Image (cartoon, rainbow, N blue to C red; front, side, top):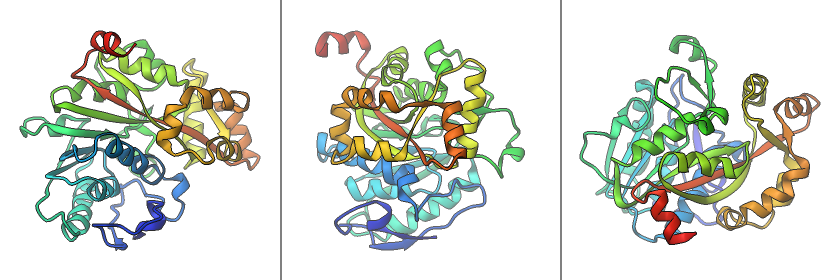
Length: 332
């Protein structure tokens, strides 16, 4: 699969380290990146601006970086462009997907300018557990974990799994705020990050904002961490049949409700704002969108009528090293 840097990463400037174009492999089980439709792609629309915003906030501080559930490896590749990394770690749940991603990262990053001394490591497994035991403390961990639990075996899910779904087999105790809003994996990842972050490190959680921002923050606070909105943006809903349909199923079971907006509305509300600027105005923008929101059932009906649907995306920045009580004393 060919990737053009400026098109896919939506960059007005050519890369400083990466080649201007490169090719990646895709395994049969890899979630396909939308290289030709970047407005529907998580790395293009969400991860890249979030990484840039963190570098603006803490320039030069990210030397050890990990991405959880990397898929194709394109998020790790852009991280190597933005940060001057000593260590780049990637994980995925499926060993065959991870192997392909690792070849992509080594091929592109290993051949890039100024990245020759970067250690690249890869490990497969559940959530953040593949990183445990390696003795590395990361400055930044990024997770874009799925939200929708489905009942299926691994073999059954291979052909139909999307980035929004995961096989429901969790046994951990979860707070109601995480369960009701389908944020269980994000909650667990934030809890696990404590053992893996450097003292000043953070975990960035990329979450489709199909629910109120205050509920996303409340989920992180329930994990016992200090959390705040890092970036706020939007993307067109990819795989709307499966994804919106999946939320319809869970909303009818009493969860949520979950919300979408017409793409044209999102374009207008976010026009002229960077993801970081929108993050600083998140509650004002959420208020502007209020009159246009459609719950899962209404959004699915609109999609069936040919309306392009999108949703907001919140990236929260959490520091497990700073408990909520300390955060309250310092910032509230």
